[in-house]
Length: 210
Image (cartoon, rainbow, N blue to C red; front, side, top):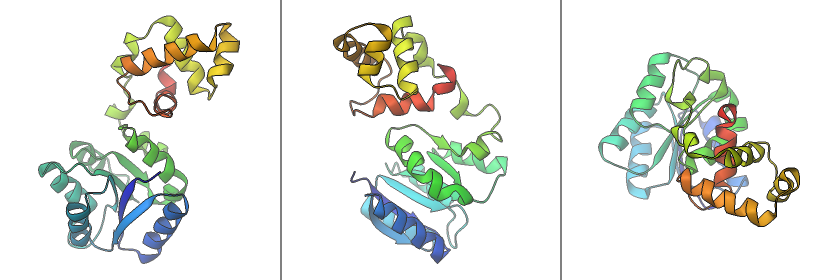
């Protein structure tokens, strides 16, 4: 798991805590910063896959960095960590293509799940704040679901319950080969990448619509 990450937070303890935690989980922390200008320079220079940014920092806020990344077509995906629950901040975050938005008090608990979603190209917003997001983009039923057949939907439902291919074959009385065929059709229809975990992550993110 060699996802390159830059972390920025103007609270040294939070910065060190997150850096140590993610390093211990095998992530590749390529740079850290205590203010927005330094953070943005690191993103431009190192082009990390993900930047985890505090919203409120000296010189540049996490949102301003997200806006600059969008304007300059930088590929780094932004995750914001914050104590803020104001709706207007979420709207801005979504407008600037922010991929993750988690509350600081849950940062350590949620950061790995958030990163897994982001690597997969799926936005992740803390459950605690999802309720604040009125009809947010995150909570809409994915249109691609309508492309799946009844059998494929059954299989995705079982995948969302963490069932293995063998479990699914047993439960539906079909061969494991058929399950693999269905899985590959589903991945193709949902336009997911071919990583083994992509379909499981997608199924768990969209569980409520299955």
